[in-house]
Image 1 (cartoon, protein in one colour):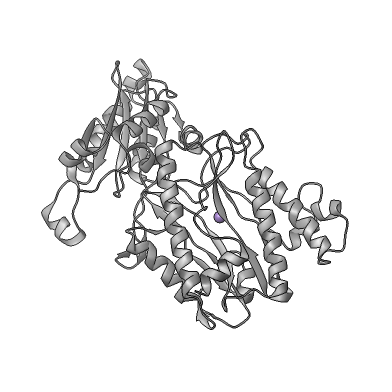
Image 2 (cartoon, protein in one colour):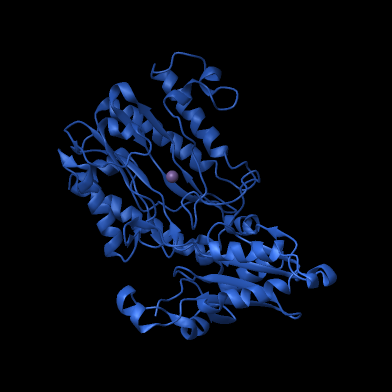
Amino acid sequence: MASLPFEESEYRGRQSRFLAQIPQDNLVLIPTNPTSVRSNDVHYPYRASSYMLYLCGWADSGSVMMAKHNGDDWVISLFVQPNDTTSEIWEGRRIGVDDAASGWPIDAAHSLLELKEVVTESLNESNGVYLIQKSNDEIDDLVNDALTSKSRQRNTYGMGPVSIVDPSSILDEMRMCKSPAEIEVMQKSADIASQAHILAMQKTHVDVGEWEIQAIIEGYFLSQGFQWSYPSIVGGGDNATILHYHANNQTVVDGELILVDAGCEVDGYASDLTRTWPVNGKFTDSQKEIYNLVLKAELAGIEACKVGVPWNASHKAAMEVISKGLIELGILDCSFEEAMGENLDGKTRQFFMHGTSHSLGLDVHDVGDFSVPMQEGMVFTCEPGIYILEEALGIRLENDILVTANNPNDLMKNIPIEIEEIESLMNV
Ligand SMILES: [Mn+2]
């Protein structure tokens, strides 16, 4: 049977912190996302909704989590695909109702065949619904029917829900700060991504195909029992200046750099890692200048990830370093103020056109309201870059940073970032 990434107590803690914010006369419905068709009768590999993974670790498709207060406590039910020999012969094993009830942090499991009946009845006993919409049409319809039906009973006694509330902002806020158990998984995800990049550096050679580097990295993820958290970006030469390059189908010639942005997913948690290295194992002097400028910005950005500062403090710090550096190198011919701009939108943006940080967790671009300052337990990427199209040059460095009460904790401390370290790794 599939095993849960965390102890039951971790999930129970999340559930009770969530439900403590919901009125007890409301019903909570959290459906997972459906499978998607790739073509004809072939589906994309399934990945469950992060909310479902967060609240009960259930990773199979089609399911719905329901929470209902019985007067004393919240009761959590999960609707799952029932065991069915014929379907399982064709589609694979199902956990089924009994094993779901005994092996997952829920109070009751039901077959999805009972979904309509149980949910309809529960809706009629509730005054409102907390529902994440647009992921399960059947649930959306049931809730909308319950809301709009004008039964005589309802007119007389006020039975049934009168409002739908989206609970995602409550859950998003909870997901922003990671628990020690989550951080342990995220460190593992960072370590596997780091090891994959190290292997790729060691196996890089002149005229390497971008797809070969992709295969080394993603093959390593698979060999460890995991997979990518986002499609890998492997761009040599001027392909490195395309921020979301995915073709990965060119060879990289002598003298060019290769930019690799590839992370993995461990138990639902993403790592997000970028390194840039020369395919021949030796940086040229002009590549070194730009690389070291990006590195300096990276270190300044990491340093800025501290409790109490605005979440984009790392971007400001990285942009200051890059602005100064580009002026010193003569690449920008303007004042520091013009380079920075009034809202970090100055001339530097020509060469550094993306942000420096995003949150990271169950989603690669993780959820949350980042108008609040950085807090202990938040994880951000720090990923400055410089892209000079005329020189076919793109350099980005990206580490994942945990905000702590003390110094920022760099989850990518196990992969080299200095030029000398990378060159010696590539030339053993
Ligand atoms: Mn990123």
